[in-house]
Amino acid sequence: MPFLKLRLKKAHALHMPVMGHVPAFSNANDMINAGYDELTHINQTMLGWVLEPGEDTRTLLQLTALQRLPNLDLNSPPVQKTLDLMAQHKVAMDPTDLYKVCGAWRSAVLEALRPLPYF
Image 1 (cartoon, rainbow, N blue to C red):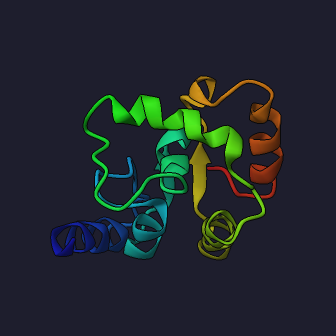
Image 2: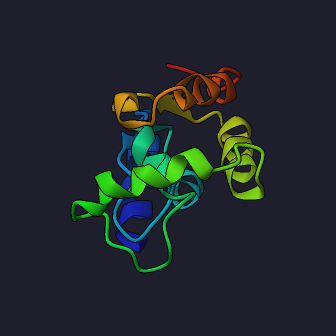
């Protein structure tokens, strides 16, 4: 993602925050390390915790893979790594598309995100 890092560097040089989606074949950690200031759409962030390498979120998989979320442990190392990176880099989360996250599990996700910064 060299092109992305160059764009992020330019935006930050102009004192502009950068927010965006988590692109296919990447994950939230990649975007945080690249320099995102905000991650857009919580479902895209969460997919990174349940997808297998090579799975393509440019398909309906971006919706059907969300059915894996109820089995996800929010205290698991992958989830905690992302949340730690978000807190360390002060990366905000835009929780749009939270309605796609399964039922009662929604409140646990919101609780896990509570300490993170918002713009």
